[in-house]
Length: 79
Image (tube, rainbow, N blue to C red; front, side):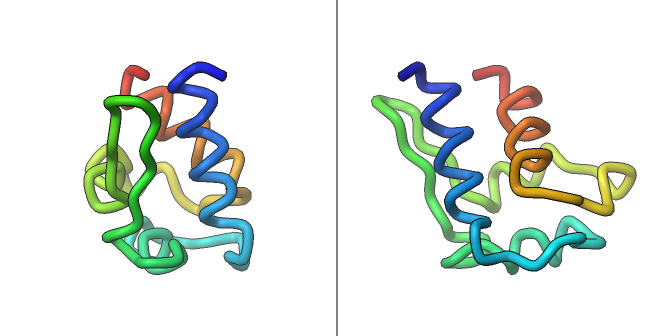
């Protein structure tokens, strides 16, 4: 599994219990298990939800699914 696929999978898993749609990036961060401090790690790459949140804009919301969030984040992170 590539780093991109691994991080994508961890983001989807981290949001498995979230209730969608989520209307703001702030509410999205709060939906992660440890909030903004939630970490995804693959090999040498580690990113927190807080760091990932800087890649989001208000125009990205509402967020309709965990997969949509993961697609946006890994795409913008350049993994």
